[in-house]
Image (cartoon, rainbow, N blue to C red; front, side):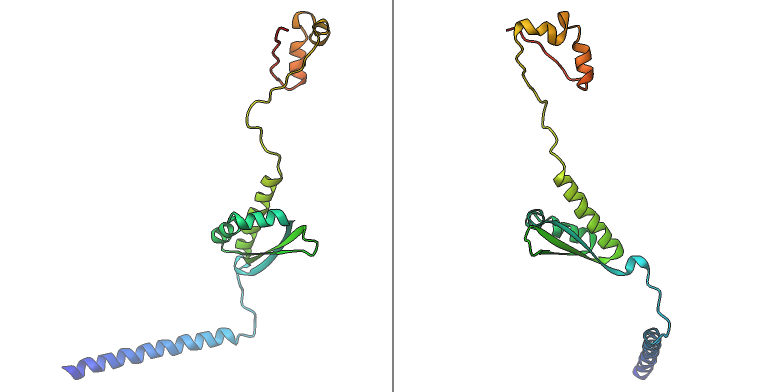
Amino acid sequence: CSSGSSSSSSSSRSRSRGNKRAGAAAGAALLTATEPMDIEESERIVDQEMSLPTEYAMQLQSDGAIVAIMAETGAVVDVSPCEDMQTSNLRVSGTATAAGRAAWKLRQLYEVHRAPPEPQGPEIREIAIPARQVGAAIGHNGCDLPKIRARCGGIMIALMPP
């Protein structure tokens, strides 16, 4: 009984050794191939470089945005300041897809950073016009107010008594 089980074990061991030998032979054939192997473009490792103001690059590092981009895309982002210390080079490395996504995200963050802030509420300005000049500014009984509103993008104009 025991000899039968050991022989089946030894035969399965010899089969697994045969599979390992076949796998090793296939690996050796791939490594010694005379023609280059096709690697999908998206799997090729690339480096992309970009420059950003050092102050902004340091802000991205301190608030964790670079780490978040690396975790999300799988790319690696290295930041090194230039000699002038005003700009920093960012090197984005990884597969073509990962590096492209990470570089795009960094550019998008910088564009948002550079954009002027959106107004938080209505902008209110008061312009004092002497009573005797009001008619000349807005027309008789405010008849020119619609033209002024249209010319200024539909703003609201309110008149207050003196």
